[in-house]
Length: 318
Image 1 (cartoon, helix red, strand yellow):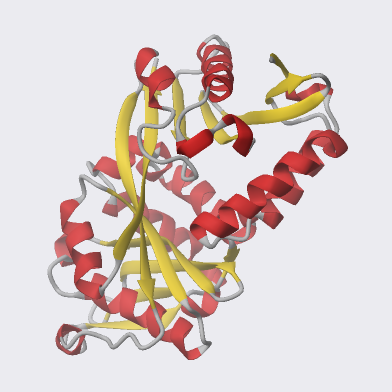
Image 2 (tube, helix red, strand yellow; image 1 turned 120 degrees about the vertical axis):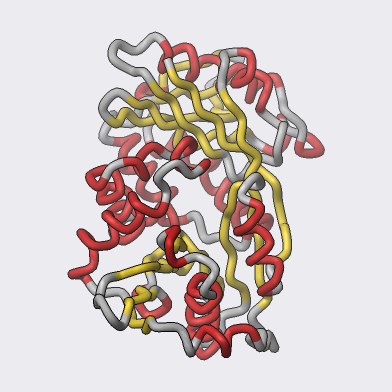
């Protein structure tokens, strides 16, 4: 099995493997990956997607790609054909691909940080090469809530008495939302995993990726809300949702300012999104959360979310 630069191939070479990956995303995570796959194919044809392909006798059996963001490298995807990854265990092909990607990024001039979140891989499956290269590992949970027949918990009623109001996301919310995200994640474990949370400019890039690009599904403004303090009229929390399949919603961001936590704002935001999706006959609402964020995990369990998968986030600081 040879490992060859991905930019030597065309969309025709990669399409069969991406079609298989799209089916796996659908079957295992109820996620329509087709928009992301189309974007990947366009970048491959444009010869602008850095990465590697595992090739044997002219056929692609796996691939991985990454992007550069200033002094940071981000691993965007890793996929190996099902025949090379039996029983969900790490395969030699995956190990080769990951090793090549990590070596390339760590040797790239100016790169001082590398991030990866591999949602399609169960925790531990590809951890070996990352840990060998000095990465920090953060287990994360993919959680799901069945919306059909779900009844809001009585505790939400108390939230209605709090001095805040909910309104739907607006285009004019970008700047305020970026400042809110930065304040919410200051010193938080998730800002160690995603450094975009650390600055307003980084948070703006994060928001732009969620709202305008298909990596986390199609942004759904109707199920995305901002919590506003009635006295100051300042935003104190927000929830952003996307549609990842025809009847599946996914929370891409939910946060509340530290000084307002404990007032059931997060609970109310989650229920508002769930109720909006339920009205439109959505079947499931999913989200991801860092396992060590016990307070958030407890809240989600209280609402009825259950863990469907545990996966890993990896971070390296050079």
